[in-house]
Length: 314
Image (cartoon, rainbow, N blue to C red; front, side, top):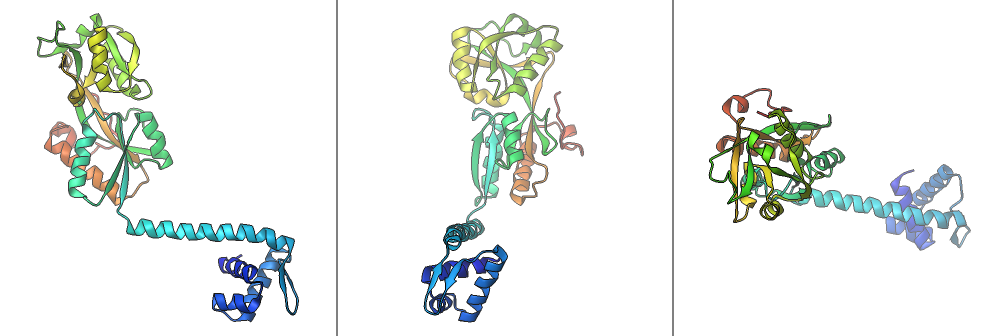
């Protein structure tokens, strides 16, 4: 079955006259009749009742006309979509964990400077959700800890983010330049919303256990680092977060880096392994430039040939 046969049939069903239908399609009447007959033979049913002076649809023809019109309309929409995509500006769908973290915003700023024609759509989602949307083609690139990356998602370490603690200004540790990890044993820890930052939560818990204690966890959670500051002030708990989220803290709170050991949270770019998009490659290149300019990675790691798919936790 060919699209032209469907088109000829629809035109004939509308005109109910071979001569007029042939004129509309700019073909001779015999060619139109031949194509409609081929269509009927392929379907195994009569679509038209023909006489010397009249053409009428059979019940089968009337039913087929409805479906044929829908098919032709869908083909037309598909063509319009393709033409619109060819003439419109390219776009990229980017996953971010939380607007309070500054890694991806800085990368995207570089992308817009270098690719001003690229339209960027930001989607706020936790890393597990980003994995799902990347695999489904709903996202082009994301960011997060690449500790549990599925096979269809590629990753590249882009930043080792100093980990620290958000505390009230009048906290006993606020006068110190840094806070030893062991000091968290006496604190009530506020974690992020599990659906949004499960990797960071697990990272913090593992850090405490490696220091020889099981942390006391505040029963509530927050969906953003901005909301965490209110809980830190009201409930006298502390919030362990990377340095990149410090911009979301409010007056009354202080961020201090964790030491003994000094700890860094690994941020990686995430994308579909089979995606050859030049726009995706452009974002990755911009991320590398930003990481180099801002010294997000030590030179020993930045220059490593095994950087891709590496989850650096030192």
